[in-house]
Length: 67
Image (cartoon, rainbow, N blue to C red; front, side, top):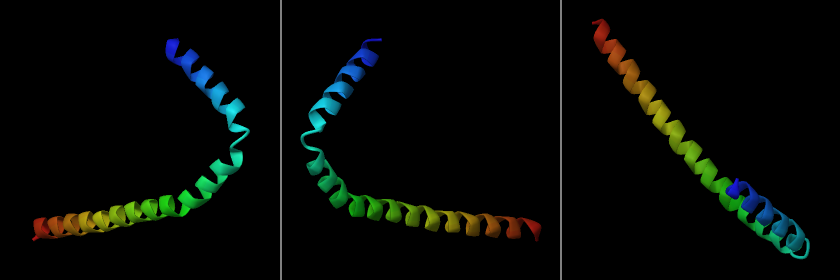
C-alpha cells in the first residue's frame, strides 16, 4: 500500500511539473529514438543468428541420429 501511495504521489508530481519542460522531453526522445532502435536491431540480429545456429545444430544432431 505504501508503494502504491508513493507511486501515485510521484506520478502526480511528474504530471504537474512536466508541463513546463515537455518540449525538452520531446527533444530528448527524438534524439534517443534512433539509438534505441539501433540497440533493438542489434539484439534482434544476434537473436536471429543464435536461432539459426541452434536450428543448424539440431538438424545436424537429428541427421546423425538417423544413420
